[in-house]
Image (cartoon, rainbow, N blue to C red; front, side, top):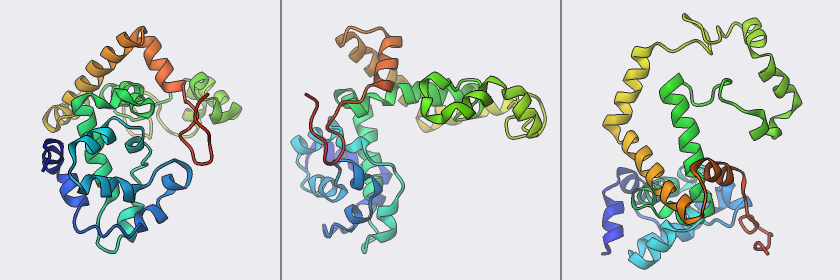
Length: 236
């Protein structure tokens, strides 16, 4: 048994997701990500089952483990109640701990997502918040939403969201004591340490790429090479 496999076995998600896989491929057949990406959850589970450290390390450094949407469709159809999505979560977690995630384009996107989303959660109490949502970063949201952002106080006021104010409402101000409790949860569950690991490894990668952290965050958020999707050639 390999060292990396042993580390995976320490993750409860791996234990829950890997029971008695018979490599039938049902998970791949039902997987939404497999329809679009060069991604096959059956092959990933098969690779992990061989317990070969070289193969597992290649997975941890690859684009492949970052294609999963964690929708858990695989669990609903597996005849043995395995969860390829849970195995992917364990692989992602180990890749983050070891700093291997920076070796893949999709893995490097963990930095801007961690930077924005966890910052929103810990500072504002929301995963996504209008005050930090920049239309120029999300032009796909369309001109109507751009107008909403430019007039958010009026729009959310008419909707009764109580935007940024005390009391009730979908966009109310979250009390500091609740934010402190969220921070405590992150500290106890390992979330704070995970943020540190992501930032540390990303800073090292940014230096290798000759970028500042601001440049690195923007580049990893916006850049997408060819070759990730089915029926698509590799980047020239």
